[in-house]
Image (cartoon, rainbow, N blue to C red):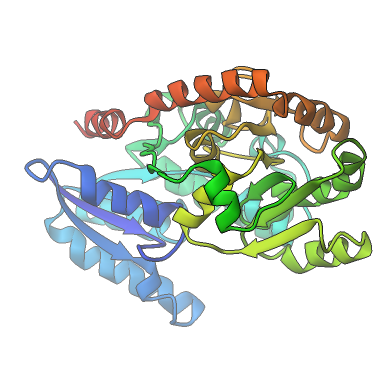
Length: 366
């Protein structure tokens, strides 16, 4: 099969589509798939409308010899790729790893409701309605929609898409072996005290603000508590100002964007990994934390319960619930409890093997 992948990002760019494209190139059997990639990043330097026309033409030219067009986003690349597939008479698959309309509405239009509510409602301003219409139109063109969690399957069915054509294919996870022990890594990174580690793109729904505000209360119980945050994003300056306002410059360490291998080592050296998120489709970051043997505390939202059963592979609490987080943090620092959780977490990872992900994808293509 000649597979044409239309992607907004491509390695070494950072982001889910880039990682996923690389995964397909490296793991789909070469005797069954011939892959060609069309990258939106190659035309992104062009003016707004021109770049979409240019991308459409690139996909149109490349699709001539393809058997299937596979778009990794329902708007910027998905709509052009979908129309090309229709014009060329090619099979069209679409991968959706999140709701782009909701994310934009949260960041630019002040929308605060959950994705569950947003996906089922139509009472929004014209720009938001256009975004929702665009991704729904793309989804309706697709023969098959691939999502990384059952939660996202439900969200997309709220768009009015038939559930039977939305298929769950869990992302693959390959643990990275870290030979250094925890104490060696703590010395390497000069990590002192009880370290709470968090990471992710600094956007509103990642909930970093609450964790920072919680720190003074946490320090009353754990005096040497310190928070390390890896990542960057539009909320970073706001969070830095908050740290100064609370006089926590010595207790909150912003690491910025750091290489994946360093991030995993820092997570392993930490005492707790925390992700206070309002929304996750499939939190690859949680699997990474689980793989290095650090207890995980996150929220019972989105696809998180598909990765973690509360008090089994980790701990799940309500988003922004300070008392719940404080209570769980006490449990994670109990060695007897944390060791059992860590062991169960590593067993859970066996459900997300490369073979399972590849076999599932091939089955959907047949």
